[in-house]
Amino acid sequence: MGADESLAPFHPVPGHEAEWIPWPRPVPATWKAFLDAMLAGRALAPDAIFVGISFGGMVAQKLAERIRPRGIILIGSLTTTGSLPALLRMFKPILPWLPRGIFNFGIMPGAIAARVFGVREKAHLDLLYAMAKRIAPEDGRNLNILALDFASARPAGVAVRTINGVRDRIIRAKGETRDEIMPDGGHLISLTHAAGVNAALARWIGEMERA
Image (cartoon, rainbow, N blue to C red; front, side, top):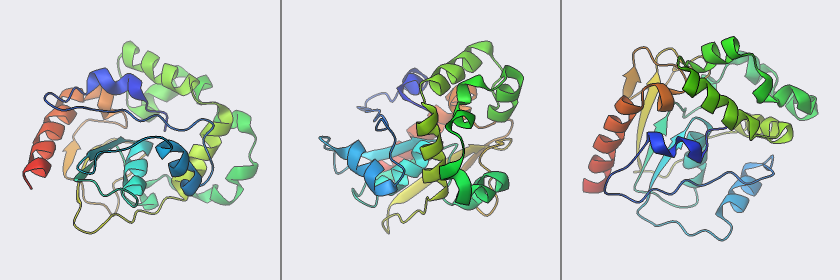
């Protein structure tokens, strides 16, 4: 949920202008307030293609309810909260009242973080921690609340493409059709399988532009 513009170097989009939109800070706990804050003072091109990584995929779909894109590409993300871990969904009623400290993702032990997020290289783990440490505990709690309040209502006729890791321990593919699967990929395929993700991105962007 903390993927940010530090992933930009892993996903160059030759021949296109890419804008990485930051989450509003502090993170509001409702989708309306979140999108209002994210779009404040920002104009998006009507023919833009929305690309979302992890929680960003949810944002891309919610944003499409306000601004119709040419297409949506989801990387390590989901289209229904049914793909989130059952344990997290069980805690939904009490999330707003849980202590903020437990949402300090930067203190997760390295071995656990590597397993949960599917990273193998030290450089990738370091980047994961750097992103996590930029999330205040209160923001982390609100991101979880938003994730569990997510309901996709994309405009009819908007093409959606999805790529996920088969070993993703955060986003489960149950009940969802994936366009492409990274056979040994975990959750952060943006880092571990950037070449495969970029090949899919280039192909799908081309298809969406020709449509």
